[in-house]
Image 1 (cartoon, rainbow, N blue to C red):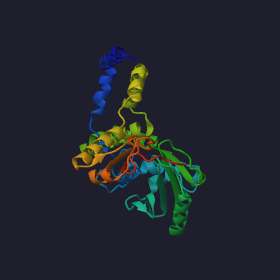
Image 2: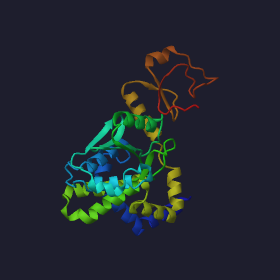
Image 3: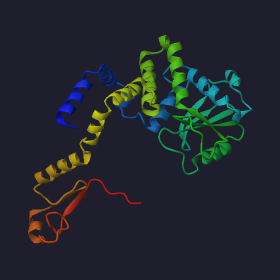
Image 4: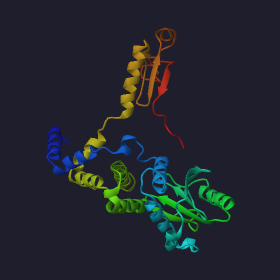
Length: 302
């Protein structure tokens, strides 16, 4: 792409009203983005545990817990309990535990226990779902045992599909949006903002369905050639790190040797005087025979 064409494409982008909307939307503060925990599985489990606990500071009572339990018991996997039974459960003494024996979320009622495995970006591994099932069976033999596999898309477990009920983050979003719609006026303002921020993060980071994501796709399609050119020529972070490191080494009085994108090599003045330089057969571009090096980006081998 020629310079004038690139400049013209950029000018068109700046005049695009959608671009202004996207820019404005991205500048709206979101507590989960500020804390950089939008894709952190542990933080999602923490926030969900907070919402599920009727005794927590959100003052929602058991509203979210009831909706969650109804969804769980609507499954045919747990035939001895139906979603209608949730209304008759005593939720005042519920225990919501985090990382109990490595289980993400444990919901313990008088005669019911719900084991929730939460997967945001990672996948099940090391037979963990089976291990959790065995732990629940051993620890709660007299409880109705139920198991939930919570993922962004509501994926079915690869190994324990007969035991774990898949629930999606879309259900979480729908439940929280319903709560905001119905109870929004009575909610604490700060709690309401937390929930709205959480809904936004789920849609944007986990599901890709928020308004800004859809808007960004539209802008990209309308200016595809421009964005592809920018992506192909974006600065390499390794180059920037390498230059910073070289600058610091020079400040320490060290000599920069033959370096590359993935390695910064250096030596001292005294060692340089004592080492051989081969000007004919060069392993490194300046022919040095000995250098210290920092590896910026190690090559992976299979």
